[in-house]
Image (cartoon, rainbow, N blue to C red; front, side, top):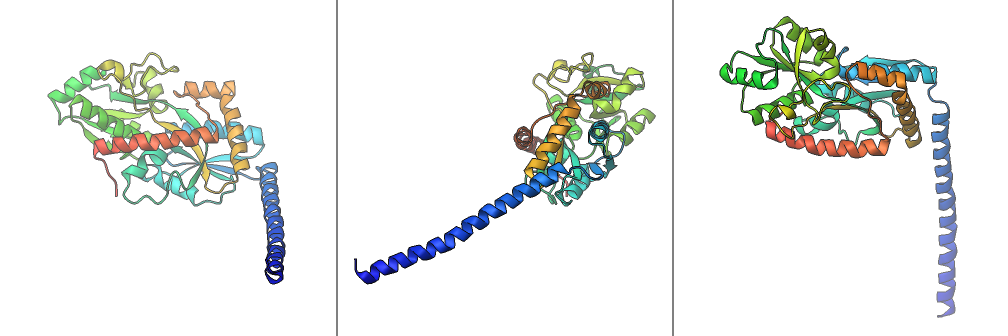
Length: 342
């Protein structure tokens, strides 16, 4: 190698070292600063009111779950945790609101099977992506939908109801939590397997549907067990089937759809907490750990069981994997049902 080439090579190496070292130092500095900011966010959290958005009306199964968790977190954190109901579009309106919120841990959403599992396949124009626009925090519940009927209906179990519907297909209608919800799709799958017809009346959540069912405006309803269990226990409604694959531990007296002639049928809805995308990982993990602690509290667990459901907490990574599987599963259900919403 000539002297000129050697000098050139040495100069290039010196130049590269001169560039690389400041870049390395800068990168390390940025990393340290980011970690410090994340630690500060966790250490000072929460310093003000935290809002748990429920994308359905007050009084339903999702609302009951959120209020139990909010009560426990308020006690643990010493700060107000409020529940804000933002219903509409099968859970989309409230979920989109949180997707666009600041990623600081102060606005969270209790998503459900519909808003974060079904709707991405159901809606033509989704304005958020359940995978890309949220940080999964923890699963909250897995509970059955319940098929309930007005006391005027001359049936006492699913077999008798289906026989009645086949005999008089135009005389009855059923209400669900809304178009494309787990309650709607679950019943449509059951109709497909059972070969019967019944008109669908979608509602904006379980509370208004139950009101109409009690009043006789509709004859059949399907919604989360927590929203109707009290009415079943007092004899105001007849609960004839649950949608879990096996009998529900906290409500063992109620038969499943599967054991009434539909082996393998299982369509249980779920709920879980999500933060806006970009919320620091350390903060997501703290909120998740605190929520799991609340859900593990014996008093909170008993209150949830009394409401007709069970807490099923999980880590953020476990919940992310669960949501991925649910999106895939319900995409097939939407296809089978033929349901679609603009």
